[in-house]
Length: 229
Image (cartoon, rainbow, N blue to C red; front, side, top):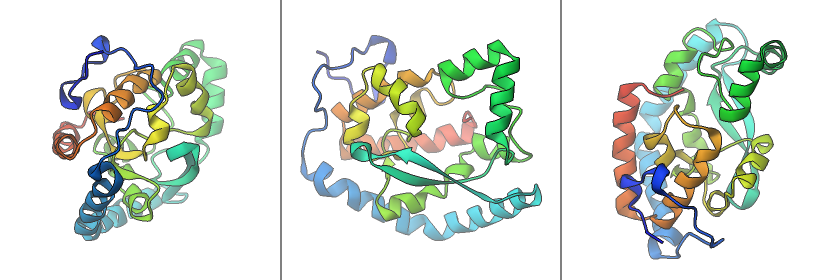
């Protein structure tokens, strides 16, 4: 099977590997990746905290809590609390149920993508925070605490786990979820949920310091382009 370079990865030409174990042990995967996480987080913690603080005030002006915590699936299937700035109305779950019940097209879009292209649940300033990934900046504390990594598969919720497994996903469970990753820079906001499987598998098979640094650099370009959702 062809071994793709992570930065040149094309989902359309990738065949998910049959092997259950895809992350090769190396000095970088065992020790270096965590060291890189700590160096980046500790270098950025002050400016990130200032941005998060300003965004928190804007969210609070809309009413309701500024932060949003949700259980996400982590390495080896362990659940952890993932931190975000709130970008939706406090009754977003109830609104989603109503939208799906009243509109079959919205229900189908949610089932397929696990997100809505034009989501009416998003609050003022929420769309901007999502486009620029400001809402995800509190996850630097998840990285600091060891639940996440700077680079890895984007974390998903326990109720999405079965969709991922049914699609043949396994690499995700061998890695810490990331603030950014291959899916984030290659298909951000424009792909079905289950296509994450092929991106995560490709990332696991090509995991290296070089590729992680390139993904971080490309993430800045994606954020500046404001293609997030």
